[in-house]
Length: 208
Image (cartoon, rainbow, N blue to C red; front, side):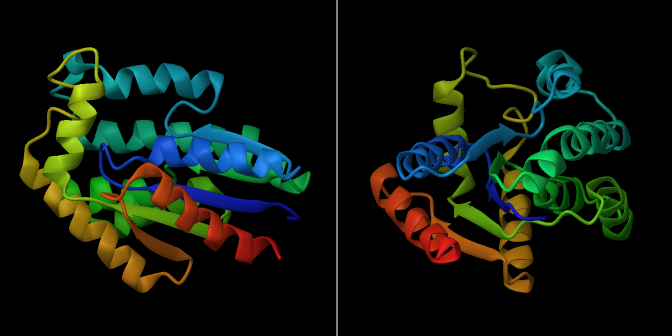
């Protein structure tokens, strides 16, 4: 495919959405054709799945149900948005992708890693990111930031998880990044402008 596929990853409150938006605006200013999306919720079907996944009333959701809902969202997202736009030569930016499930369900939930990878590799149809930006931040700082931004200070279903869950996710992300050359790890605790400049420098190198 002719486009460029960039994903943003990190624990809750790491600043992914902010940085994805800043990069999209910067690329638009230099006349690049951009599609900004997210998971879960990047499609009409995905928005309904997102509501189920984040609803605090679903706090007792089974881990197997959770990963299959994420997989359903991603399957639709890849087919409906990611593949078509990459085939048109656009730069696709998405807030979360396959690595979120590996980190959250594999390292966080402790589900069988082979099963987690098999489900996700099946739904992405071999569409891997060209570049993955991991915003690394201390989970306690990230959760505090996320809950402060939430309308409900307790946070959504995921933001109500215990801190150990997020510490395992962070370790997982760093392990994935160590094994995958497409990853660039950036300190998510810096000022937003500093982080943005670092990200844009990396992306600009890919565009040359």
